[in-house]
Image (cartoon, rainbow, N blue to C red; front, side, top):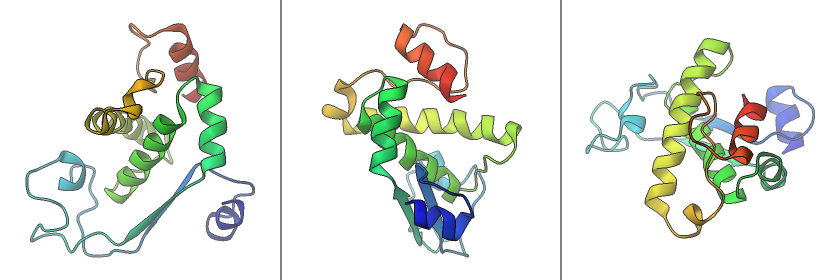
Length: 149
């Protein structure tokens, strides 16, 4: 992952997730069907030509970060996957205002995916809600949320 991060993004060291979007014909606005969950799927929509992309996730970073944030590694991987999906849908996290919007969408998507997957995906530590007020979360989740924002 460190080599890919250096080669394609010019950053040294490993990173958590890298998204490569190879498509050119799809709606990449943050309100696209890919994220909104319309009954008509993004891949079959008449205005979309499908998704041509790769989302690379670094398991070593996921494992390390999950311990740091007090969450299970599966939840950290779900967060990275959600982050990649959101980039494919047109979200950007380069400036603080857009990052805040993306983080809110990421939190919602992580919770939706964990709820649908069930089983071991929900049996681990609670998923912290990143970038929003710390209402009603346990101490470990509060520390994780503060650390990640």
